[in-house]
Length: 264
Image (cartoon, rainbow, N blue to C red; front, side, top):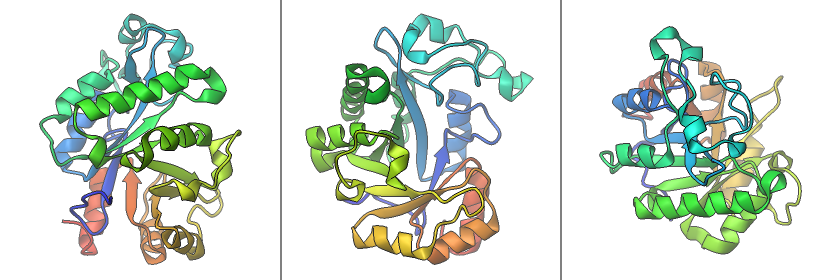
């Protein structure tokens, strides 16, 4: 079943309003929802004591005042970290949100769509990654957001696990080229994917129209993300058939699409 898009081309706020606020924090999400995007994208890890928290990297080093792997830290250790100061002094003291805190906040936004990225991979942590994935789906079900979400992981092995266990009720966001999703893949990703993020190369980030057409021929929605949004990238992606844009600057993205009559 297709997601209920309100706009011709929806926009997903990547890690919140990440260009201007510390990513994957509640201050970033509060800013994002004030802009009224179609979707919010987040990253989930599980702590050593089994709690799902929001952070992008596997290590805390880049976006906190700590060091080390998230999966080796307790929730208390994660909550002790400052995850705001690196983006600016005005954000000093911002703490890591749990998935539960995120879901509680978004109970007040019943039409918001979600892209939930699972960051624990079987290749790195074995059954720990499967436990984290199952816990995430259970919480999505409990809060009633599964039917308006995609689940995103860079592990094709984990994608196949999710598809086998949950079927089409969990929409899987995959990546192209498929090799980006790691080893131990046994299936062609388009056979289970709801959508696919199309990645080019640094010298040519916008993939050719044939790859958009190929995804659509499989019934898979082609989505795009660019680390820097530009009119040229958006125009060419729209021409090629992009269905959704994920953006670090959702206000710019929506304004640009609005000017083209593609977003309210």
